[in-house]
Image 1 (cartoon, rainbow, N blue to C red):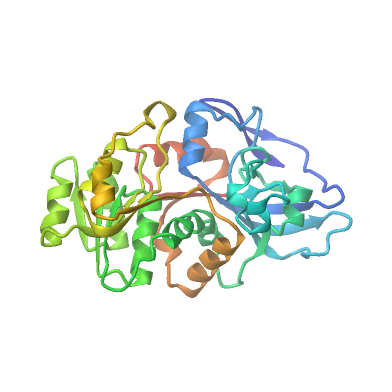
Image 2: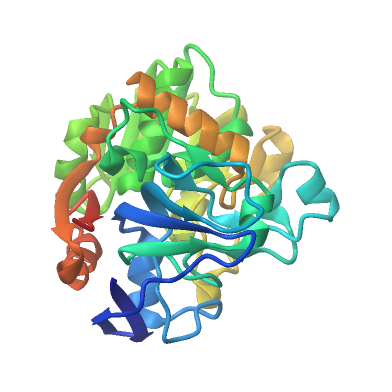
Length: 346
């Protein structure tokens, strides 16, 4: 099989490798499409502690079951599927509660396990046992199905926020995650959605999502604009979908009393200590939430939203690349020239 192998920062090589054979309890998937995630860009650029080269990355996966290992009865050959990224220990309180993404012994497809930037991928026994292989509807194209993973992460973040009819929502960060947050907020009934970014190029790409207001916060005071749009009250919900300490600070300045904030985008380790005015949290009764990855039920919700057309997957996909051009796809995403780039295996 053909595979894109990561050897270290800036070094991905397209190689011919033996097609893997599923051991007992494992499943072999023929990958159809695998989308490029922001974490793939960071791994390619800087490496990652949980990725030990040489390694195949990629976790936004859609494909067909090619072969089933002995003892597997939960799926069948030829089935169209995606794979839940997070693989937990299976026995801790969070795993037993279905919140595998919070398992302290978490392992992940495309990080600890080999991922989807290859023509075939083994789903490990523990992932099969935990039900990580999910069927895809026949009417959902493979490229759009790759969006189930990032969309499920946004669903996880918004579950805490209880966005409702009439809410004003601010999303800071106009990448694919920020755009998915916009679309989910629409589905929940938000009346006014403000999308902000410091990049005019990203905001231009994000026009296809049709937020109500776009703000280039490099050129305009975002806090002032939000207060103007809300008659001085502030937003009901603010989502920071970017790795920016300043955005987290601004979120507190533009939130209304009893508002909800999601620090969705993680910060670089050397910039993760942020000064916040906690009196705002105290006196305005603000709720601040974190969000990390997602779990099986949120994947299923994402698949249903994409399949039903409530979330139009094709809006997000701006580029398709063959596997041979994976590095070019990563560079397009890194430069902000692509909203969502999908790699096609055939």
